[in-house]
Every structure is written in structure tokens, then in C-alpha cells.
Amino acid sequence: MKLGAFRLILTALALPASVSTAAPASDGAAALDQQQAQRIDPQYSCIVCHTDMRRAFLEGVHSERGIRCHDCHGGDPRAFEVAAAHADPSFVGTPDKIQIVELCSSCHSDPNQMRQYGLTVGQLAEFQTSRHGQLLLRDRNFDAPTCTDCHNAHMILPPNDARSNVYPTNIVITCARCHENAALMGKYGLQIDQVKNYRESAHGVALFQSSNFAAPTCIDCHGSHAALPPAVLQIANVCGHCHVLVRRAFYAGPHGKAALDGRLPGCTACHSNHGTERVLPEGIADTCVNCHGADTPAVAHGEEVERLAIHATEELGSAAAAIDELVVAGHRTSDVQFRYQTARTSYLQIGQAQHSLDLTALEDLSREVASISRDIRGVAEVAAEHRWEHKLILLPVWFLTLSVTVLAWFRIRSSRREGSS
Image (cartoon, rainbow, N blue to C red; front, side, top):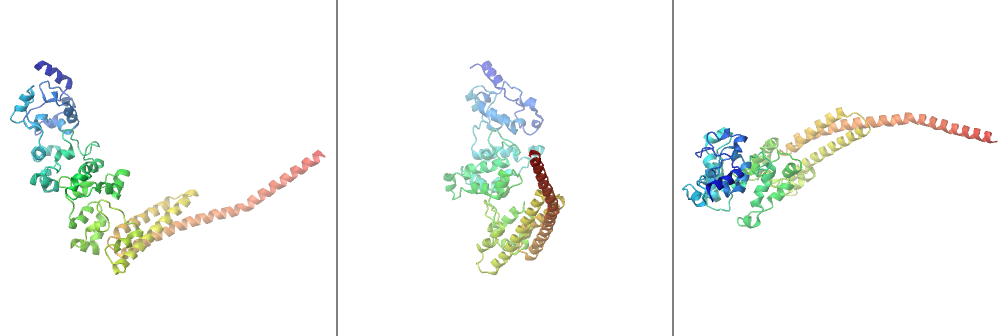
């Protein structure tokens, strides 16, 4: 095919403008705007064959930064014959997984290039410490993921783009591509139910059902580039990133000392790792039995914690029911609603304080919840008594009204009889 025909094809396909072929991401790439991104370069040959990749690449952030095909794949983008384009000494073609790590890190480990975009440069160092990185870079095991397995190869999107593989609601799917692969995980003795358990957990429900993006995903507990399971001594600290007050209470109690000594796997002693189920008030003592004998002082202590938690739960529930009664009766509830929120705050503090196993603190909080609950129930009872008093006052009125109505009816009936006779 003649060069002119190639140029006609290129013009129709509209490749974004190519900037300087030397380190385009380092200097003026950030200045490219949308108009430049759509400019046609009739001299760029890669898109003659790779139109599908061009379309995906245009959606990603790299195209906005002036990066072009040959910056990653090498070759001569000015040659219009496949053999000539691929014969260039720089041609890489499709890099393997290790080459991809080296290629990505050539920019992403350079502070001079990354600081202009506000990006960190430690991803390669973190990846080398991860189980994925050790398998790939040290053992040359190509079962392990590389950069493009998680971030895509051409349509690389920022984490806050809902289409990105690393967007919070997509992270689980990205990890599941390998970790739900029974054949792949079977080679390493790993389970494949982590994603299922996570979706059913308190964290998964918060993220997927309540759209709570503060809920942790896989990378919040395992790390992203430095992906590793937390060690036993690290678990409480990892959970403590979010559950700060729970972590503080945990370390203030006897379980915290056991965890620091390595005799207890932190939070996962009572909550499973990916399932992270809530321990309900009525299940506290049963949870204690999992480690302690049924008739031990430790379980007796747990039963007392359970009693206080159940009592507070019942008191808070009765307060809520009393408020509902007031609402149905048409009473103003702004004052009692404020009191209820105070009780609820104390109730939530019980969930934190129970990790310290401090009965004194739990008794104080439970007593505060019960006291406010009694006040709210008292308001509802007084309102109910007033309603009955009003009904009692109205009884004579209703009786007199009924009597007058009956008498009037008899008078009318009597008058009709007299008229007919």
C-alpha cells in the first residue's frame, strides 16, 4: 500500500497528537489539553493495525500525559511497514510480566516525574516486599499478577473513576479474578471463599448495600502493592486504622496483653478475618467459650459483660418504642429524641468498652442508657395518662350528647304519630 493511502487511513482514525518521543511524560506532557488530545498525527503508524488498543488508550490517563505507543512498546512509529516498524532495536512488542514491572517503574519510581501529579514513587519497593512481587520478581513465577493485571494495560484509569479496576466497589472483583480461581489457588493451598465471605460481612454490607465508601476493601487490610496478610501481632493495628477507640480499649484489657505476646490473633480471635461478623450481645459468652472452658472465671466474666450489653440493648429498644408511641399520638418529640441520641451514644460506647472487659465502665454506661430510657418511658406514660384523662372527661359529654339525640329522636317520632292520627 502506498504511503498516501496509509495517511488517509490514519486521518480517518484520528490518533492523538504525538509530542516529543524522548521522555514525553517528564516535561511538557501535563500541559496537553483536550484539544491537543484529539489532534490528528498522520505520521503515526501504530494505529493502522492496533485500532482497538488506541480506543481504550484514549480513555486512560496516560494519553492525557503525552505517552504514546512506542514509549512502552518501542518500535518505529514512523515506519509504515510492519517489518520496518518492528525491526527497530527498541521494539519490545508485548512485554512479559517482569518487563511490565520494569517498564511501569521506569516512570513511577522517578520522583521528578511523579511529583507533578502528586503521586508517590514507592510502588516498586512495596511490590518487591509483597507475596505477589516475591513470586514474580524473585521466583519468576508468572502465576503472580503484574501491574497490568490490576490496572489494565491500555485503559488505565485513576482510582476515583468508577470504571477503574481499583475503584472501591471494583477492587473485590479485581482480586477475585485470581483468588476465586480454584485451579490457580489450589496450587498454593489457598481458599477461594474470601470474596464470598467479605460480601456477607459487616464491611461488605456497608460497602455494597449501604454505599459506605469508608468501609475497608481488600487493599485496606492487605495493602495494594505490598499485598500481604497481616501478621498476628499486626492485626489489631490494622483494624485500628478505622476502629481507633476499639483498638484502644482492646489494648487496655487482658486480651491486648495476650495479643502483644503473640498468644492471641488480635481481633480475629472473636471476629473472623474476611467474614468480620458482628458479635451480638446475646452471643458474647458463647464467643468466650471458644477459647476458655465453659465453667471458668473468664466465661463467667463474659456472661456478666453479656448481661450488661443485653440490658442496655433492651433499655434502648424500650426508649425507641416509647418515642414511637408519642409520635403516633401526635406529641412533639424533639426533646426526647435528643435524649435518645444521648442514650444511643452511650450504647455505642458499650460496644467499644466491652473490648476492654472493664465491668465498671460497662456498668456506668449501661446505667446511663437505662436512666435515659426510664425518663423517655416516663414522658410516654404521662402522655398516655393525659390521653385517658381527656377520654374520661369526654365521657359525660358523649353521654349527654347521646341522651339529647335519643330524646330528640323520640320527640320527632311522637310528633309524627300525632300528625298521622
